[in-house]
Length: 123
Image (tube, rainbow, N blue to C red; front, top):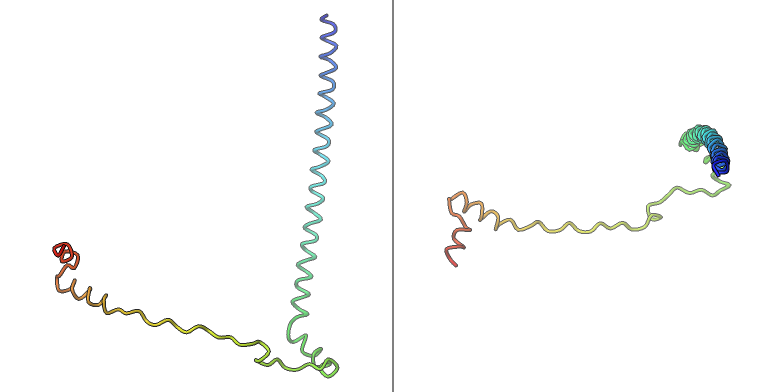
């Protein structure tokens, strides 16, 4: 009986040991794959920044102007007119608020009259 239990425990331990080592190596493979992907992303970000710099240079008006002048007649290019952008109407400014009530209140407070106390006495 004890021999069979020992044999089962030994087999279970061996399978567990094999499983742990397999897991360790699979995690190491995933870590190296992650590092490779991160390096690839860094290279692509470097290329992207270089492309953005090239794009900014090629879109400068000093670079585009000679090309436009050279092909202006072939492309029938016209200057932009304001009517092409449509109407742009701003809403009217709202009227100034009536400050006479606030001025009266501040004058009453300066004169020493408490309007809240008058309201309480009136009721």
